[in-house]
Image 1 (cartoon, one colour):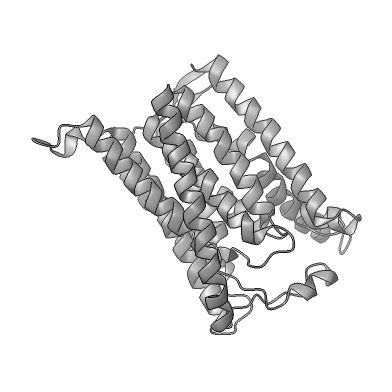
Image 2: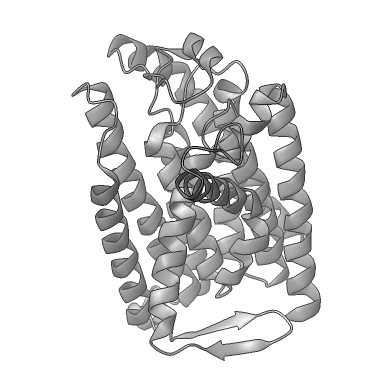
Amino acid sequence: MMIYGIWTFCAALAAFIISAVLGRFLIPYLHKLNFGQTILDIGPSWHKNKQGTPTMGGIMFIAAITVVTIISTIVYIFTGADFINTYFADIPKESLLIFAGLGLALANGLIGFIDDYIKVVKKRNLGLTAKQKLVFQFAVAAIYLAVLGFFGCDTATIIPFVGEVDLGFFYYIIAAVAIVGIVNAVNLTDGVDGLDGSITFFACVSFMLIASMLDSLGLTAMCAASCGACLGFLVWNSHPAKVFMGDTGSLFLGGLVCALAFAMDMPILLIPVGIVYIAEELSVILQVSYFKLTHGKRLFKMSPIHHHFEMCGWSEVKIVAVFSAVTAVFGAVAFALVYFGVK
């Protein structure tokens, strides 16, 4: 148990340091390149004073999570497999799932980077079109699921208090839609200083505790690295933000939280752990649907829902605090579901 604690602490600390220190050099560099965020008129008017704040800051935690996860997983493999006479089958399945999950996150981060690049370099405010993003995201999700199948994962999934449920071919359809949906939900959550990073921090804490309970040491380290990297980014992104994560960061985080849930073979945990992400996405869907059905009326003052609370007079700090608290509570619910319903 002490080894677990030391392993987890080192992963979190290393990722925090890398992410926070990178900000010291990356932010001035982004300023130098004029990679400033363009604030669209569809958001709250007072957000205009954030015009020009550097974006693509997600590179900080992407680098931290990637480096620490790769190093910790390789160490985990060396201590868990016979590397003198090793072959592919000797590598722990958990480690293979970690690398596949990291690939999912990085691929989505690349989509985000392309989108940000078009916005800030090509000066096309909307970046990739919605259709282009969806095509890329579904392609990435399909490749990820194919890789999982190659590693021996079948179409069965674990549901707390129910057990293992085999969904057959529908597993791939449901999984792909869930991945793309959560990735975009995390992207929509990035609209207030520190919000996406804070919520993802608490989501990763929940996954870390669950992974530890399931004795998944490699996955615990990946979750810990994600927690530390998010905190390191928040050093620069908390209100008032000195840098934004951009789609580069938010799409990466979306892929990351999906990867953690799928690596545990319990993607259903994305519902309680990602409750705020889902609420953000549903608020947009409801707003658009209601607007069309009523020919111009709005259900919320503005969507995603964090902007609704802004329009109600909530400060950005209060929104982050309340949304983070909700994530923490539902993360505890997820932990209880696994503890009593699976473990």
